Each structure stands twice: as C-alpha cells, then as structure tokens.
Length: 194
Length: 220
Image 1 (cartoon, rainbow over the protein chains, first blue to last red):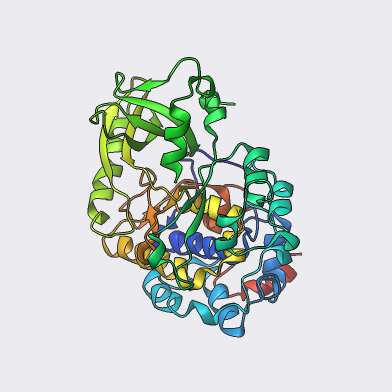
Image 2 (cartoon, chains in turn red, yellow; image 1 turned 135 degrees about the horizontal axis):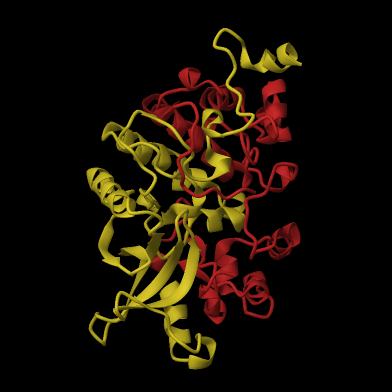
C-alpha cells in the first residue's frame, strides 16, 4: 500500500467536497467489513476495475441490501458530479441499519486488508477465531491464561485495554469499546523510525 | 485503561527507553508512538508540567518543517480546525510548540485508540456498530465541517480517534490537509481514500455521457 505524503503535484483540479464524500464511502466500507474495497481508485487496481465492470461487486462483497447497494453506488461514483452531496449522505446515513444484512469480516477475505504491519492478520484471526469467540463481558472476566486477549497482547506487544464505562451503565445497546494502544511500552525504544 | 498501563510501566525503568525522549524543552516526555501521520509521527506524551499528584497524558502530532511554508500550513490548519471545533466530534488542539525541525500540535489523549485499531481487532465483527452509530456520527461530523466550509479533512481510520462516550464516539483529529477551497489540485491523504480524480496516473473519470459501468467495454 502506498503511503503518500502531502504534496502538491500538477494535474486536474477536483471538487473538494465530492472527494470527502468518496473518502467517507471508503470509510463506511472499512467499518462494515473490516476491509478496504481497493488499494487505490485507478485502473492499475484489479478490485477497482472489477467494481467498474461488475455492478454487483460491492453488493456481493459487503452483503448489502438493495438499498445499501444503491447508496454505495451513489457515494462511490467515479464521477464527482454524480456523487451524492454530503448533506444528502448525512440524511441517508441515519438509516444505516437498512444497508447491510450483516456486518461481515472474514467473508470478505478477498478484499485488501487494512494495513497494519506490526499486527499481523494471522495473530488477530487466531485470537479472535470463531472457536475463541466470546462476548466482551466474558473476555473481561476471563483469567489471563485462557484469555485470547492476553495471547494477543503477548504476541504483538500491544497494549490492550477496555474503555469500560461505569459498570452500572454498561448495557447491550452501548457495548464498551475494546481498545489497543498499538505500540507497546516495551517497544517504545522504537520511537525512532523503524 | 491505557493510562493505567502506562502508569504501571512508568515505574519500571527497564521497559522504558534508556534515554527519555523529551519534547518542547522537556515539558513533554514521549511515552509511545501511536501512529504515523502524513507529515510525521503521532506520539503519546506525559505532561511534566502537570502537578505531581496528577499525571496527565497528551497526544503530540509532529509536523515536519518541510519548507518555509510549513508555518503557514499549521496556521491554516489550526484556523480551519477552530471553525469546526464546536462540534463534539472534533478533537481540538490544546497547544502548539516549535520543536526545531518540526511543529508539535498538542491535543488530549483519546483513551479508546483509533478507529483503525477498532477495525483491525474486528471489533465491529463482534460488536455491531449500529447501536454505537459510528456511521451516522461520521456523516454528521463531516456534514458539519462542510457546512462550515472546511473540506478535505484527511479522512482515514488512522486519524479518527475513539472516545469512551458511546453517544459521541468519534473524534476527527487531523486538519493539516484541510482546505476551504471548493476546487483544489494535488494529492492529499492516503491513496486508499482518494477519489478517482485525485490520483496521478491511470486515474480515470468516465465521460459524463457514459454509464461508468460500461466504460471499460467501450475503451477496450
């Protein structure tokens, strides 16, 4: 994946607002399926050209409903002028529960993974495999030796923690967030560029 | 909580780098690296100016001084940020300092990490994001930015932080690539999140009169 620094190069001008709508669309895909639809929206990218060729591409990959499919085609339109406006997207996003049949992760293996060099996919998948699937509440109360989070923590030197709201306010409607600081204190010697 | 982990490790010097990295003439001590911004690292730091009984952690976003214009860039970014800082989903800065080769933008530490980490840990695979409302909240925050005339916020899960408050989880943090111009040239942010017209090569925007799904057949 290319990490581009901010630099101005020559080229055609583009619509700032429409570019934000596009980025937000990609971000929605990230949240819905833990993956990015393509690494870049250009003809060198197979997934993107597939998307342009096959009307059903996102529909299949994200198990979208008809309504969701229609929304994503409007948000991820290559044409800036045909893309929905941010104002309209704001209204449409409120109905998000109608857009996808399920929130998928492993079903979309063929899509590019989000880049995270220090946290290999296999380790995350092992710790969070179907057999190890637990509710967050169970995970919190599990002893360290069987807790998949502990494995993950050791394996990746990641800091794992819970943003645990006051216990009386924990309910299923607002699950506490699992968090990972990403860079272990043990590795903080790496503050210098790797 | 992350803070507790940091505090716990703080007392064990063996796990810390032999030489503490200090910023802003020793006011902040780097604790760990949280991520990589487009112009430099993002660090979690300890504020040594806070009173001794209360340890305070902050985030410092380093912006490399690439050109004489970098100061103007920071000024613009902060002024754009100020326009939208009324919104609860915008993580405003609490201070700025000059670190010699870079500028440091200081803001509060969001204890729940970034959206990227949440996604990467398959958080939403196990916990449905709908009750949390990540998507509507993102759309609401961006809509607010656009209403205030702030565009091209570098939208990516890398720099969207998560707070512990379920009613207002997300915190947009990076305005260094933002603009108030409706039309713009150049590349900003990460390639993944760039719209077709922004990329330099083989960036294809189909003719307005064509159905884009059919363009490929037409050009091949």
